[in-house]
Length: 233
Image 1 (tube, rainbow, N blue to C red):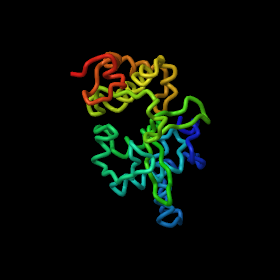
Image 2 (cartoon, rainbow, N blue to C red):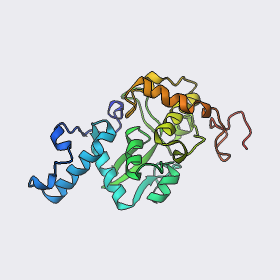
Image 3 (tube, rainbow, N blue to C red):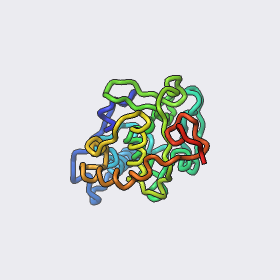
Image 4 (cartoon, rainbow, N blue to C red):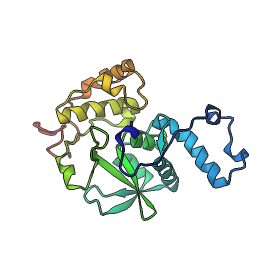
């Protein structure tokens, strides 16, 4: 879970506890809250389940960014450069699923630690993660940092629209382990947000096992798993 990995700057976490307020019958605008406060509460109840119930304040920042239609993203080549990326560009750049809402896909990637959101001079920036920590307290590595070149990278030889979000994520999990020379297990994968059981994790991993060693895109760097030791087609 994102919370357990202690992302840098993620000091405020929200866990809606009142089941009645999670119901569709609850309307924050009937409680006397200001419009802004009611809007934040509605967002919180809508997206908290995507974070297994415990969401960072940055999830609200991200949700507001999505509404704006453009996402400030850190350059993959430099931690000091940023650019505004349209939502359509994000779909291709981040391989977001076409079979889910764009908003849900963004939040699920965020919950998995694929990127973090940082406030820099009152501007919220999406920073793509090159390497997640193995244990809480370990360092996060972002693209654009020198250490990112040392992190094994892996491409996924499929698109979310072909496999669906769950199977696509399972394939990414398997190939990330292969790039590190470690073993992907159903027991570990079952601890990821939204998987819920070892049986479901095993079903997902088995369903994409035939794709685990497939060569990916021909433009991938030679260090990526999809082209390592093989010639691209």
